[in-house]
Every structure is written in structure tokens, then in C-alpha cells.
Length: 285
Image 1 (cartoon, rainbow, N blue to C red):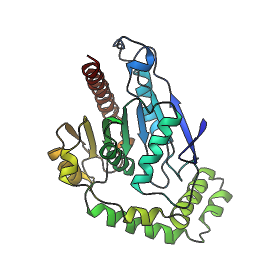
Image 2: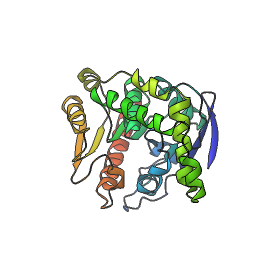
Image 3: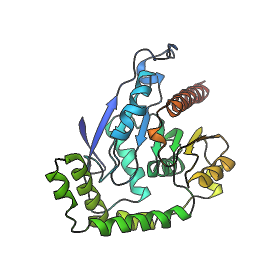
Image 4: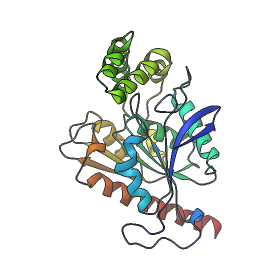
């Protein structure tokens, strides 16, 4: 566990080094470690989510496959600092850039993997800083217009239910400390920051945004997810986008246990790394 200062905030970061030899048995590209890989950076979802949701399902397998991995708690989430404001997408992109700079990775394009709202933030980052993003993996990303109103309504209801709630104390009395802590974090984010207002004020994406993406994109959605229409629109306009629909799942693709998601993400990460190396080679030739 590490704590870094970025964009004047303290962020909780976990960094997994690339293994010397991928678990697949495929040899790593020639060259020094710092030049052989495109770092994979994870962006988690809202409120009760944090970097731990990625650690075992995807973070460790990617590190074992030879990718440098960075996981961090977004502002206000997990163990990162919780300021009262700055939960808009622009601030999230600036946080990301600052975190990479603090880790010495600001000179290397990264592969962003975002789950749920983290996927939305990853897409904002790719549009705002195409020089920074070598590839995208978006897991259940909320993209289309209606999701904003739906999300704001859901979070507002949750905020009301948590205000002056006795639930954290009751959970603690039952020794359910983790659940109690998550409830406290949710209350702090929803009732004591601008998070809901910032999301409500956020802009939605357009087909022109998607058409302007100049990096490989993998989008993964559950078959029963209400976010599939937005993913279809993205796949229909982004020039280098692959859409995977996982049968039998909804907005819980990270809980998929058959390895389908892991293998899809590993294959896409390898493709992003190859594309990044090819582009770098072309630029230096």
C-alpha cells in the first residue's frame, strides 16, 4: 500500500510490477523493462467501489502476463482523500494525469481499464488527452443520455436513506466492520460532497466523440444490462472498437467466474501493447 500526493490530494495507490515472464509462456518484447510495456491503469466505479474490486480478478493476471499495473482509489473513494468538491469528469482526468506524473509514468501512454463510472471517466480521459491513452477497456460503461438522470435519481435516494442513519452503528455492533465502513464512506460522498451535483452537470457523449477515438477499444457488457444500447452506439461509431456481450450477466461483469472476461482483457491488453510499440517504432524510424 502506498500514498502519493497528486493534484494537491492524497491518493491511495497500488502498483504491481510486470512479471519477468508472462504466465502464457509468450516471450516479452526485447528491450528494457521501462520500454517494453504500456502500463495498465484501472479506474473503478462510484461510491462504495475502490481499487480492490480489480486487484485479484484482473490486476494480478495482467501483471503476471507482463504488464505493469497501477490501481488507485479515485478522489473521495476508498482510502484516498475526500475533498468536498471536484467530482466532475474534468477533475477526474486531471487527477489521473497527476497520479501518473507522481508515479513517473506521465511520459508513457497508458491502457485505461474502467469499470462502470470508471469506464465513463476513462473515455473522458481518452477524448481530453489522446496523447495519454494507448487503449481503452470499458466494462459496463454508462454512456448514453438517460443514464445520467437515472444515476442521479438513484444516488439521491441513497443519500436520503443514509442521512442521519443508524445503519453504520448497527453494522458495527454486529461486527460487520467492512460494511459499516463502506456505509460511512457512501454517506460522506453522497451527503457531504458535490458528487451528485457534479454528475448531474456532466455532459454525455456524442457519435462524433466516438468517431474521434484513435486507440483500440474493448467494451464488455452483460447481456441483461441496461447499458447495452450505449455500448452498441459506441461500437457503431468508434473506428477500432470491439464489443463483447457476456451471456447471463447484468451490471456485474467483474463477478464473472468462468475466465471469459479475464481472457478477453488479457488479449486486448496484449493487442494494445503491440499497437503502442508499433506506433512508437514508426514515430522513431
